[in-house]
Length: 487
Image (cartoon, rainbow, N blue to C red; front, side, top):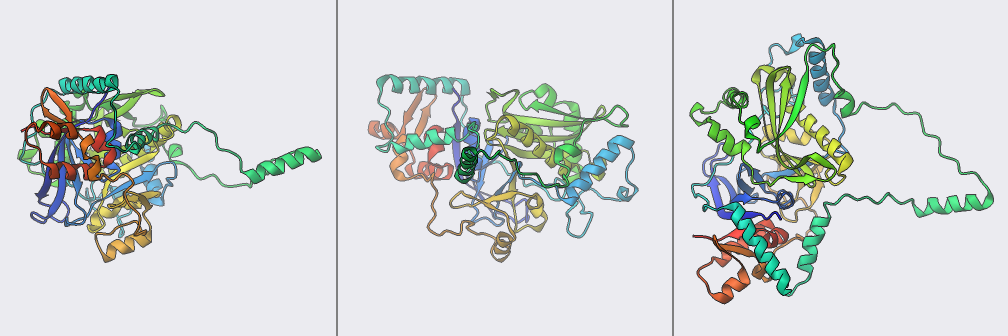
């Protein structure tokens, strides 16, 4: 059994990493000791994002630079001219070992044309690294707490007293959310009209004729561009998918040297901040518990590093989370000496290819999450250039295609409710009547529901804070995750 264990930190105010304003970036934060991959999928579908073990959700209606969660449907993704140009450039470099003379003067992090369409997505702007709160999480033995919760659940099952605050639909909602991740194995049905025509033809003895396909020029797909290397190639590019927990491969001297070089050259970071421990804290440590996928035993759900090896040299690392419905991009860093290859964009295309590959075995896993789209910061709009992109409504948590109409609305007003239906509501809304079912960890030995805790009058608990947290994570996660309430 995997249980999510979190400690809520409340509202956070920090310097903004996008507009550089002081004390104007508003968010809510929590420390995640452990997150089930299903729960984190639900959380990012409500606007949360993780950095190491710290999870944060921007207050889009209050913060200086509203951050809209953005995802791409990898199965509907179409290559742009710019994408093809970058892929051809990489293929030519691998084949011939030569750099295009037109790329010689390109400066890392600068657009190559007026609209920035060919710019390296990772170097065009700094992805805001959240400032961790001063408050330290309580010290827990995570394995012990998991066993505690398991015993608690077994006790409830044995006594047959499972109730959901007088509302059976709550447990049904949670079950449906989990089932939603399961692959749809039913083949698509034929349309009724087509079936009637075929039956009529059979009665009349008319042979069923297959419609003749119209001749059509097949456009090259992403996989076509990412064809297998040849022995005659001057360079060999190999991509290794490494579990983040494998620190013997994710925290090597080569990885840290690459990370440090990237932060110094591309983001002009403070050298004093660039330690191996800081890299581990932000981009290696993860609360996600690795979970095997039956159809993909060598991958599984959890946190990974995609390492890009050019011959024997490490030139890039993509930090990603593989979840039941998506691959979520966490961070990407690369060797600035290879900026001419637009490695940030190339890495995104490789990650989309990974989603497409996984979706062949796990159909529900078809989305590529790119983090946040910040329209109010022009240099951060590059993520919206990928086709088949969707933004998350910050109020109803529905997805809407990123169209010019939405862009125009965000031009006029930086915060916008994306759902045009004024009556639409959050279907996963947490209401006060659900409060009794929130599970609390009140000390290292005691796991108890909020309702029983109040009945026992066993200590203090901040009701308003728990309600605030529960509304932010949604009803399903509020009732599945364990809320640490230890002083």
